[in-house]
Length: 270
Image (cartoon, rainbow, N blue to C red):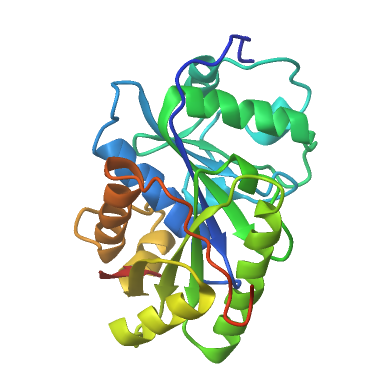
């Protein structure tokens, strides 16, 4: 079990939130961490870790293709007390590529909210980048307040756009009473044009971070047990590089959530 130590300097925490099911938010979360770790850290420390935000039963290790790799899961941390050493914790996590993975074991004990917050704080003290898979926006995600930036992954069909409006409201509600959430839109859809993407972003009151097209190679890689983001030739890798340039290399300093109407780069995921 990891030892306890006060947290040092903080890295950046990026949440990935899916407006609808089946859009590939977990795949994007894993790939972001894997690509960041592959390209090296910013301060010579542990480069990147991806965290399963669904601590009650996510299974992010399956998406990362490390479900058979030994190492700590959320259930192993359920009884943790006090501050956690991020370095010790990272040393005991399974790795996907050069990224660390903290996932959930279905049916295992759930860590209480204070343990989750302590663990995420410890990881951000150790890693340049902590990517949190916030799962689907059916309710305010418990870790959204820990995120510096939230990427809202939405589809381009009418049903998907309706879900995106609801997810945008969830983010706004989660930000009430605290610092405004820096949220950005990633629009998925093979036929989504730049004009459509801009219109969707404007309607949601979010800046457009990226457009991503469907990439069958990502699904084929998953069937072969290959971790998302490992292939340098995939469009998913290119998407992540562009996002990381904005999220880490040139982070924005102003909050970017604007009201919904009526209120007071083209890359891919499977």
